[in-house]
Length: 365
Image 1 (cartoon, rainbow, N blue to C red):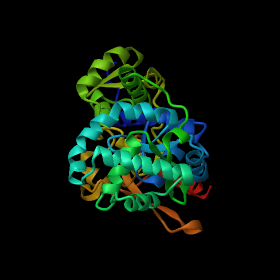
Image 2: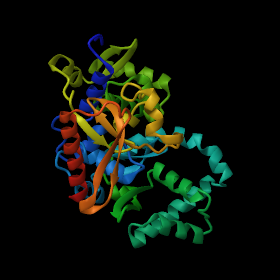
Image 3: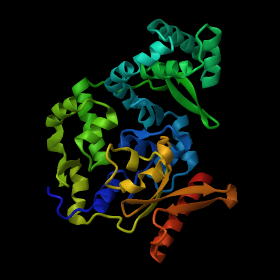
Image 4: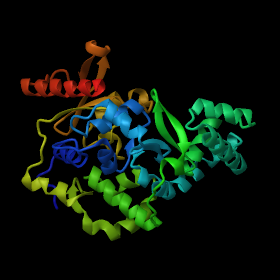
């Protein structure tokens, strides 16, 4: 499929459609998270809005309930970064990605004096504490580690905890305020799917391109940190279930259903969305230049500090950032457009107000 009718904004709207951000969305928070395959979630409130934005009428309480009942889990399935995933998918994702990540941080573990024996000791300590006392906060668990002669200062505790979660011994469970408590993986997720490595990578790939397409093989390799050579080898088995879209001399892949929108008419040319920082619409790709002009990238991540601002997305293009000012009834969404010399027209302003009302309603419910 050639992209001679396609513009960057069209590509952006195809991604919005793939991600459930245009049209009907999903029926539940769990459905949205499962569809997205994995959604970046190191900022918990941002991740909750990312899930809620894809479920019409969902409130913050709905996302919290999905976390509390285990129908959505939050762990480190890839890139050493927290993501929301469906519970039955977490174990096989970890089995695909954890070894490579463990090798990449082995030098840091040597610096922190973390050995395999230390990890196994902390595993036994943590599981014994949870078995006897139930879900535990990170701070309380670190106190237990410290008391057992396993120091947690200087990032040592964080690395131990991450390793215990990557080995599927622990997982973050129910919420206590705005913090998640730690639980035993097998108790919290009693049923996990089992996939062989090639089968797992193939599913990872198809689900990524279905939920994130159009995207490239390099995007997927970066997203999962699966080596590109292995990605290309497995891709041969699944390419028949995907649609190719050539754009700018590059092959992009997407689901046939999303590709059909090019004939039916890609929705959302006048859409206006207020997305959270770290949303997959921007973060889910190695190359973000299709939806974010490179000259504005620094305004999303000021100083390159790794903290992504919330984005205003108009018709598939990131056109600014936004912030929430005030609290309760006085709370208001304040946008900051990249180009103040091009003010929004009346229709876009109305759409922006509607998007702001939707976000405030989400927070209140």
